[in-house]
Image (cartoon, rainbow, N blue to C red):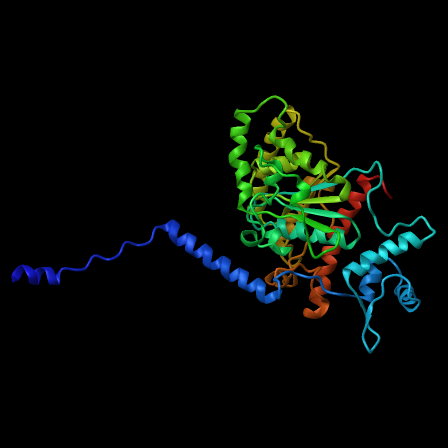
Length: 408
């Protein structure tokens, strides 16, 4: 009886805590489901993003014509016709804007081109946006640059080379739901017989003229497989650093500019992108820790690119620029750091800087860029200040692209 009493009073062993990998997996599943539900709520019924309509003033500015002439075209029934409210306000879809550019090119008698597409002899511009310091604004920079160029009439391909796939999510592709196996750039540069044509991987976005190669965690396979491929390389098989360029060559006639959002690490993916690039854009936040991190990045990049160059990699760039991001004009230490960088890098720094803005961060909450949201959703001064900063930075990059083509 005493033994039974002791057994009855003995503490019941508690269940073992879940393994940490099970906890992380459960968190990931729950977060993914919530994000999917959030997107479905924002973009029903098929949970796909769409682009807003543009006012006649915005259209005239984008195309480069007078608003009065645009009104005359609509009154005469020439070119794409806008939707008109009872009060006379006119609005256009982005498809209308692209059609208007085509109409003006086809009907115009002058030398002006409203579609700034490449012509014979002009090289495809491949811009690698790269830095391995988190928070540098790399993806925000790549997304706004790709969309700005599309709004200006260029044919653009955005490539999400970051396994975290933030660029894909911004353009309506949630990586774990919307990107199939072999549906990233890895599918076009892998080493085995499962390799696909890049043309079959490219996806359209809701910006007519902007396509995307989405990303997800599958991209890490290239980091794992490349050392094995190097050890077992057969004669005639392209080295890793030539594979991205080879894939892009198969679709280059479709595009004017390619924008690559590189991963925040200096691995085989980043090196492959740098070897395919014709230009490099390095975003940097003007804080001491960020600049110190960038210093290490530059040292490592220089050493690795020298090795790749000796192995036959293409290291000829039309331009390389440092871009100051998330800049706060009233911040004294930031201003000092910008002055310090300008004294070191000179004209390799973009003149314009990307300002820190609540408008950009607020747009990001709904997985949008500032180019996608309308002015009336923000305080006008806040919106105008952020938009002026974006347009100035991206306009400067656009000028570099034009210069690389030898255009005035």
